[in-house]
Image 1: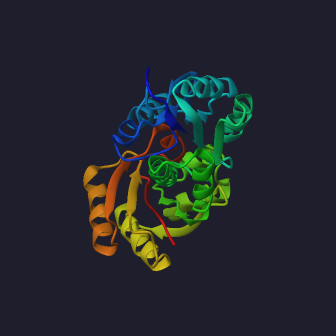
Image 2: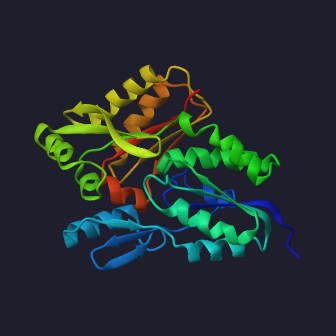
Length: 285
């Protein structure tokens, strides 16, 4: 008979981490849906970020996402508890999706054996919190202790990214028409940040997008002189590899991170930001 793991961890597909991390650390994933016109795809399993963008161009319609249902969460929790004492479920910010609320409702059936966290984050910011949670799990802590520790980090995650165009954010209802058309006319590449679990526009960059990434890195170094140097995730939607490498080299030059990873954004994230979106994500002190 297989020995039970004390804590099983479940995340949704908005969580972006280095390639191989989920499998290596036995993390289960509940998929979100990507909707393009009249077609629905299971994120990551049925459609990649690049395939999603190709379909968007072909169909001429903007993509949407759908959250896992309460019933789907119940099924995942029940399955995980067959081989675990507890489940720790981490979800995309409740300010961006109803995923967390659905997980919380589903957890009520399991007599306290399922502990849910609203990460108030997404993408690589969510990924950083997962990495911390895995380290705590592997140190032998139970789900409630891990949750308490993760909650202390929510306001310390630098979740920001620079977008090439605000078209996807606008069509997804995540920026106003005035912001979108203003950015388009003035050729602005805005920095989008997560504040209290919701996305908002912050700094504005002008000109060549690749030069904007470098200015963004410079600004982060000035803004966060005191940071957790254990790990940094350079997370991005589909873009040229050489442009990503320039940013990674800049991060190596400017910061003192022990680990730096090139992380591809999931289809869920690409649905809302489009191509050529990049974030330098880390935890600050």
